[in-house]
Image 1 (spheres, rainbow over the protein chains, first blue to last red):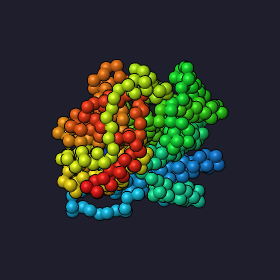
Image 2 (cartoon, rainbow over the protein chains, first blue to last red):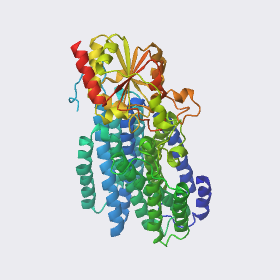
Image 3 (cartoon, rainbow over the protein chains, first blue to last red):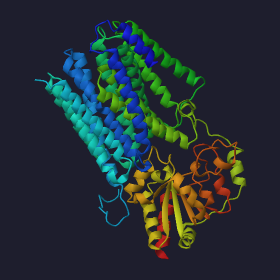
Image 4 (tube, one colour):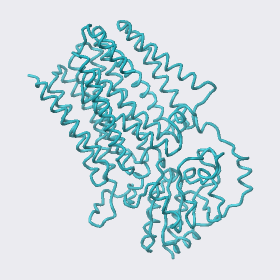
Length: 126
Length: 463
């Protein structure tokens, strides 16, 4: 489906686009998307099952990089409504980013080895 | 004034590398502390580069929004109980997907007069995905928090209605792409997407939430990647697709561990009715089981050399993870080898059980994955099952007519002795009777997990 759209985009690209976007950009972006997805699958497959919960907190925070999109809209628009939408986007995404990274650190610290050298009693259980 | 685009790109590359490294660090507990830190650094670089490249006039709004992020985000992260991590994940997905949906809407209003068909199509798809994920995450939160019943909401033609609603939303989306000036259609598209997300997750049972959360995680990532396509921003594309593939891989692991397909999890409505298998309760009462007191279990355990504990979510519900740690400490003091066997779907989200036990100070070296612990059961003297049920049912291996047949299970029945701590003889989530209860080497201990384990601690201390 994406490929069909790609063809479509080249046909209609005569219309002025909001962002300078050539069909070459599109192909590069598709390539980046596909490579990143494959890389992601390989990386995640190798994540130990012990850490799947903090992994979800981590990827949630990473995907909140969409904050960047909200920032770009904030910089480009003067319309009140759009400004409010983008600001809400920044607030939501930064909440996720901040809570996500703190949480990853907190959960990962819970995992302790029984090897004697590493016995930092974090905080007592509960 | 603004940063040269080449430098911005270079900084984005640095951010991408840090994101990739952060996932790599998660492959081992020893390096995992760097996982969060490197991703946080990558995020800081990405955001800083963007701020340097794009001049934002309304600094007040920007600072206000980020302050909100700190004020709301910090207490959530610091206070949430480990048992509530699934709910917190659902909330964060709701936030993330709403953010991308709102930004998508803002971009649509902003660009609709100039953007090409491709951009508009991606934006529409992104908004549908974002809004449906938002509604779905809210319902997942409500179910996990038990604000609404966990049992799936099913009615005749449920899937037909849901799909029809999604198609309406998509059709409105197509209309928007064809006639971008008709912006009145955008809220209609959003409303139908929200409705679809709502109905989709309403129709899924509470015990399937681990898979649902993972799938919603993937959707959030996909919509972030879509925003990257719209803005021609490769950092967004990479970060979004890393999150998307993570969600899908986790969902795949979860559904494989239940021997179910995505479609079955999403549309099957499994768990809607209590399945009456082979006469249900009547048949259960007719079959004899052997039961023991906690004191007797202590005697069995003292004569064992190796013990494997198989915890399920019931253990977390009973808040018994600290008591179980006490039991395993006492056993280890007596020179008995103790391991924990963790089924992939134990808990309410991927990896949840490991976090709960780690919080109770169980060293992670003692936490064994299903595939690694299963070959060890035949040499295990005693297997203790606490708060797990379906994942120990040997019918999954032996009875082709069982709803569980084919599901990978913990082979506790192969242990020399099985101690099964359970409130009653009620069947598990699948509705099937657990064949394990009736085996000659199985001893049932009836009662609340925490109470039984506390009694066990007392008995072990007394001896």
